[in-house]
Image 1 (cartoon, rainbow, N blue to C red):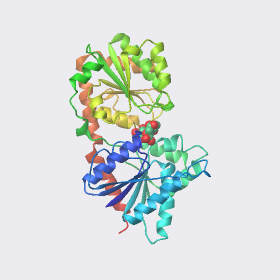
Image 2: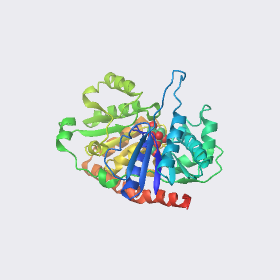
Image 3: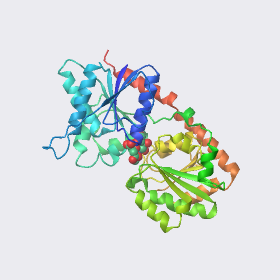
Image 4: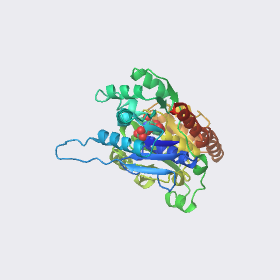
Length: 374
Ligand code: GMT
């Protein structure tokens, strides 16, 4: 198959998932064309089946806002026609689903029919998408997609609740390459972060408000009073300065590090003992799944799709949003005993296998096959 993938090329979960999907499809012999405004961060290896097409937005002085969606639709038309694509798979509704609709209509006038699959990832529905500024276009373009998928049952239900969707939304959970995440910790790296054998706690996100990163700092503060620990913050975003201020206020600066945006998550996760995800909402929580695949138990909120990937008391614990006390107690109960920690680590790694890349990617292939125009 010749598949066009449209996604955000950044560190966000939707871009990561789309890129890993494209790489996996290319490994299986499909020709994959990424159409994005920048090389996706996880598109970091050569594969003869992978093509990358950059969307260029020409900004004339006339425009106060560069018309990205128009440029994207034009790039899609160009790739569909010149590379004879069989299918377009767009990740994140805004503006990818509406640009795909436009491209589909344009190529139709040139005698080409192309199915469009839209995968919903979360905030394209629950936060940004429902905003009046975008809602009518989001609802329309989702309904115009030939197939719609959501990354969790929760997101599928949220989408039906939010918009008048006339079609079936299929749930295809996010996935992880469990083999890639089974890395042995690099001792030297562990020593640098935790020279005295402290426990290592970790959080990774884009530090948006929805992640509640200050809760991570407060949980760490309570845990660290009981169990000598270190905290690693991976990623970057708008709430980082606030988290840093809180760390200073609580006198934690010697116990934590911001390591910024990282591509090799498997290497960092390999040294972690516990992952904290305190979000107000996660449609799925790919970061938590990657942690589990690396054998790191997860303490998270029970928001959105997180209960679909974690098992209470086995892979970690799920608490109410904002319940810092409960999350701290749970974290301590895992970290204070080597045997308990070991058990949680093993359970997390074992459970992540249910979402292995080799199980989930064929679900997308089966869906593509149903919609191919023969
Ligand atoms: O979490 C973010 O802020 C990034 C966002 C994105 O669109 O890249 O992630 C969403 O998609 C991920 C991949 O499907 C999910 O694992 C995340 O849970 C989801 N984020 C939210 O729902 C807040």
